Image (cartoon, rainbow, N blue to C red; front, side, top):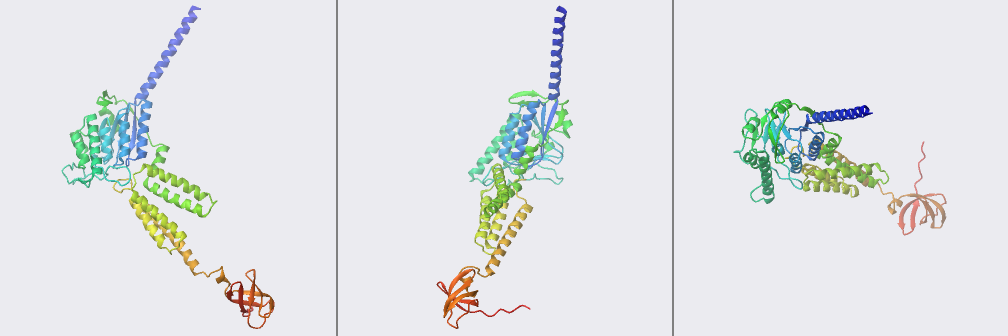
Length: 470
């Protein structure tokens, strides 16, 4: 009996030890992973959502490092702040990797790079030009101008160059935005011990640096040609994690690429300025067609869904109220063309207003946040075709003779039903009328032509005999 108890205890201990070993191995496997996220376009609500959820997933999986591979021309302030807040509060260290060669961390990308625990650049990349630009009606975006280039095509530090077009001294709103951006990037520089003075120049004067110059100026930590070299060079470095120092152990990490899931792809499509503009137009026309054809259901359903999606897209994109007002005016003029045909005048004016609104709806100075010319051309062509159709219908209706009322009775022919002297009754257009004729008496069944209408009495005359067809 005692032997059986000892055997059971030994088996239980062995099982617990084996379970602990398995769990420890699983923990080592999870800690031995480096997640790679990609930011290859303008910083937008879609990219912010993708990066934030990627950082959360890395923390859940116990990853040892998150590598944010970046090539961006800039983007929105609100989305950039969301990404920076997620990086600063991340449980996993984040290394921003400006790659591949030829990539840039311009504008909003500079802020993200300063917020990261490690700033790494590939050869032939650049960073800087982070001056915010004016935007009417929505969030303030960072400027996305290309970095200045020297004769060899490399980005240069243009801190002494003429200042870009930014807020004049008397513009409190833009001065406030500029000073806020400077304070933000200087605070990020202080957190990770990077060059705060150059960071301010990047915001105030749109200064830029090449990869090698960025390392010399203590803007980037080091240069790496690929992800493997990045992991090797990052091993043993000390980073600040929420005020505490952490030594990185990255040499043995395995790389896992985290792609864009369905949610990110759908959000990217909806938050695209061209798609947002198209949703608004399709939604409007769908609802209008449903109102003109009650019960059709399909136009109204598609229009309602499109209009809601368009409004959602505008809620996350910085738009210009003047552009939105022009679009509304253009659509109103197109509706007016339907109810008050002006032979194309209102329709053409509405088309022009629609095209102008599409141009001004989003700021073309922010890369990836403008309406494309082909999209505008397609909308203009469709609106002109709609205008021509309405105009043709108006011209045809104008040329067509009147087919109702008193005018329709004049010169119409009827048949005598009965007659007595100079008065009788005739049948015209399915109606029985009083009639009179000062000439010879008319025979029942004779055809007459209506010459005049006097109240409810018709003055008639004998109709010319009809020619028989051969």
